[in-house]
Amino acid sequence: MKILRILPLILLIAACGTENKKSEEEAFIESLDSVENTGPSIDENVIGEIIQQVPSPLEISVLLKQSGTKYDKSLLNSTDNISNYNSNFKKAVNLGIYGTDLGYTNIYEKNQDGLDYMSGIKTLADGLNIGQFFELETIAKLATNSKNLDSLLLITTQNFNSINQYLQEQSRSHLSILLLTGGWIEAMHITCQVSAKDPTNIELQEKIGEQKIILENIRLLISFYKDSDPKMAELLSEIEKLEKVFNEVEITQTYKESTFEIVDGVMMIKDNSESHIEITSENVENIMRVTSEVRTKLIN
Amino acid sequence: MKKIKYIAVFIMFFGLVGMDKGVAQCNPQAYTDACIPKLANGFNFLKSYKIDGDGGAKSKVEYSYVFTKGTQYMINICAEGSSTDGIIVTLYDSSRKAIISSKVNGQYISAIAYACNTTGIYYIRYTFDNATKFCGGSALGFKR
Image (cartoon, rainbow over all chains, first blue to last red):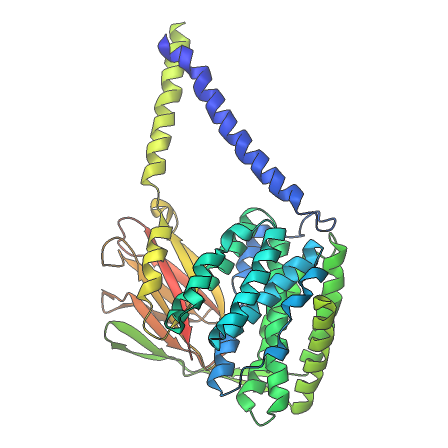
């Protein structure tokens, strides 16, 4: 008989729990005004799988530093522009752009610049209700000592990964795509500008050329929203301009079986296949021009 | 009235069973957290991958990432204790051709490092071989 008395209570608690969770989610979704987004034309899980394929812009920053390129703050998007970013579209795109800029400053151990970008990132993230993923105090502490570089890189990478995961869980993958697109455009912009100053750096030219593969993914991701979101349709047309100039780049591959050896318990694999990237200086110039045009529209 | 009593007991029993299952569920986050610091020196962390085989219901868990020429990638596996608990990672290239598997001569290797010479999408597939928990984590790092 006692069980019968407490049964409605159990059911009520269970129902309340669901209701609370639902209302939190609804509040979050309502806070993201964005544009009229009625959702993608494909399952969000598929979108999530494509999103996770896109490489981190940090890889390019590491390449730039290792190739002996000097730090150049003027290549980055100034945090003074933050007041221009009032829509969720602009906030998300520029969050990605600042993310790449932060990675660049971190790799070059320019801690004060890094803190400025971190602060800008926090402001934009707060505006998108995802500020909880950035703990400014922890990052500021790490940034005071260059010995903490690895931890700083780790924590910022983890923060961005958590944001992407959270946005996908909240069915707001379009914001994740905007973050990613912004981050990629900024990495492209920095790489192209550096390459223009040193046309003899073939590795850098190839790095630009191989971005054709990543651009295909980004174009695909944005295209899923073109019918439901006018801002995404606009962005798609910009990305397609880039795609047009990238079509001049040829990527071919030759396959050869990999070999391996085990060293200290780690399997060291050597890729004996090879990819060839055919890209001319003229291609690089065209890619740089269009990238710059797209970026200017995004940061202003 | 007796009937209602039985129904209530039935609901509560299965409710408790469900809760118990929840506790026993795989928590891959703990393993991914353990795996990140285990990336070898010089590797920068990129991604963490959860490996949840749903108690054996899933035969594989797959992720993908664009690897780029001239970069070395490391993928490690963490599971209960110091072993990989039978979790194997197999790397596939963009045409889905298997490149390498972390099980060699019956031995389960917990970390692989791939010196990439071909830019493209790579598929990172985790499978289970005599696993007991079907639960683990993995981290991906890079260095140039």
